[in-house]
View 1: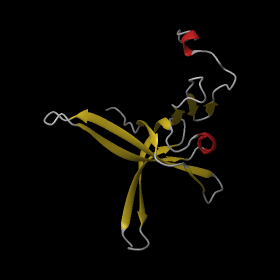
View 2 (view 1 turned 180 degrees about the vertical axis):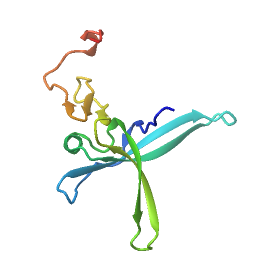
View 3 (view 1 turned 90 degrees about the horizontal axis):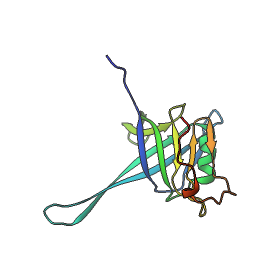
Length: 152
């Protein structure tokens, strides 16, 4: 029998600036809210329809938190990879158990790619666990000049 897989991949826009908080252990955590939208044309009316889903993202990796804090703002288009996690907590006002399902980015299977270009150079920014490649500010090459060959 095969193992299991818990992996989420999303492309969406931030609905608000990231929220950065300090945990009890002194490390930082980032919380994001990302919207994904689906559009279609209604067959019966011909009307264009849209459905938007909101996703809670929690980032525990210190390197990713720092990059998010510096470079990611409301409206940014991002690609994320993480894992679904549901946590249980007690509502202090009612005493009832509450549940939150979030996409968690931590460990080596998580990544965040900023899809918006910086300036006019058209480069995307990739930030993954234990690696961070931000655009070269001095790169003025047109993307059509780049070699299309993949080295592997």
